[in-house]
Length: 84
Image (cartoon, rainbow, N blue to C red; front, side, top):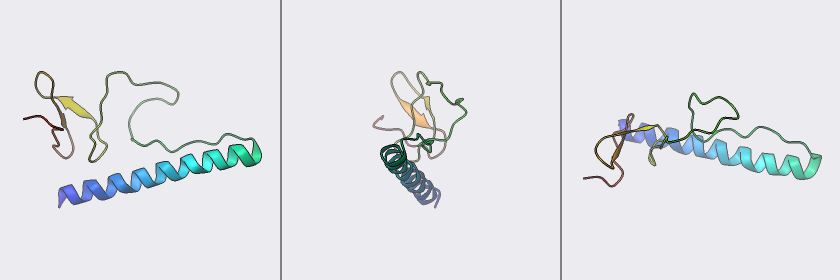
């Protein structure tokens, strides 16, 4: 059930993000104004800063942590992304 919840939340987040990108382009072309794009991942990065070294889960979008020499594991759903 937890994996289903993660996938549903991830799909909703992607849909909102990509719709906001389309709205951004439409508004820029039509009105010449720039509007905010809804971030794909929710995190604690301040607006305008670029995170370095953070990797996110391809299933649910949460941050991953190093769990071996070259492997990363999701702190939310446990996805290990090709490791082991």
